Length: 270
Image (tube, rainbow, N blue to C red; front, side, top):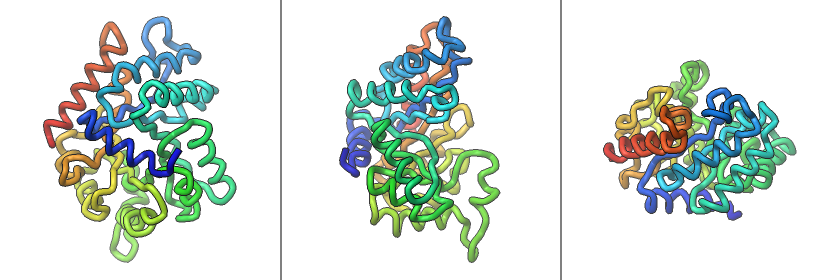
């Protein structure tokens, strides 16, 4: 895999799919339909149903590793990622792992993401500094936590250093330094549209992964208005639970309908 596969695939998907939507794969067996409910061995089957129902509608898929690892389903995550690579090879895979460590440990986390799971990009935590990100950048794309969507994110991210919020310093470092070392994007929550606009102004055309649309209540129109590039692209807008567990007799068809509605809401704002 080329270190720049993620940017190439993402740019192509924005064009070919006409979509800013990323479907997050957060499989919770307690919410599975019918006979799959509470059956952890059905995780791969459920995810593949969702993938096949929505692949033509998305710019990326984002499996969240904790939902697999917590129930010992790492082998099923391998199966899910392999299915995307083999059946939907033009759709990039973002492994949502939020890794952050140093030295040999970071290198092993990078090996896990890019070799074991075949991800094109992995989410990372910048708190340990540049040397914790370098092992990932040497292997593939990183998506760095910047201004996250959770309610408590401002506890540290909004702290000011010489008058500048920490999240803006992360954005500036990504734009000025990390982007010269490899393929870098940022995580910026849909729940903070004003900050999203500030970060877009700092990083120029850098891709932004935007969680928080759907179950967390982020507004698609505000996300696009504040975060899109001048060409209307530049965003990877993630929705997980609102699509995975959409109401309907057929879970795959219900997920597809929810994905279409979200994609269309994003496109209407472009």
